[in-house]
Length: 220
Image (tube, rainbow, N blue to C red; front, side, top):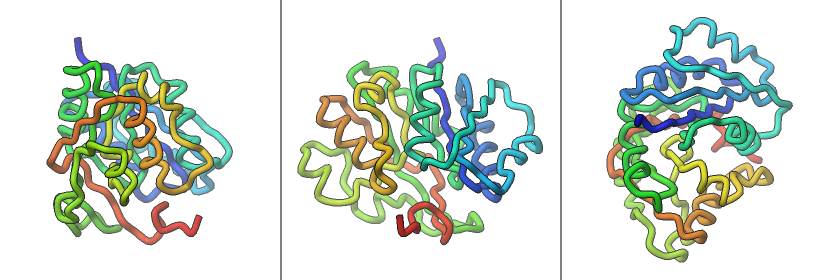
């Protein structure tokens, strides 16, 4: 049986980068069972870009909500998802073709594993490579073995670099919607405390974009 993976893609005024993100989903060697795009109150007509993309071989669902932030958008889509696994992708990032195939494999092989994540390459606003294998380049050690290791610094476990077991995500309570930074670290710590195993794939399966209008640069 092919694993059922729901891809969740929140969008807020992301018209410039959204097509590249969606195309990276379409190019997966292991297709998802669905793509859920959440329009988080965009005012730039972001979703119009979906009309210009090739037809997907899987359902594409669109949810709309008033602007409430990435965490709320991800949680809203997770509640509607039909897959056993959840794969999150931010609007300005892009997966390499084997992203889903390689990250869901350890979860499918071990029911105790709740979160699989990978290293990533960093790119700039134009899509040009900035850093190869960012986690390795920065010397961040994974996997984590103690709660102290989880909280001593930035984990660099990106939602776009992750596939999670839906049951584990629900048990942990999803993303904290009060947070607009480090909500991914916060969720990872809750997974850890609940006893879910995590699996680190030590190779880049994601291109993570750093740019001036990205959420990481927001004062909030």
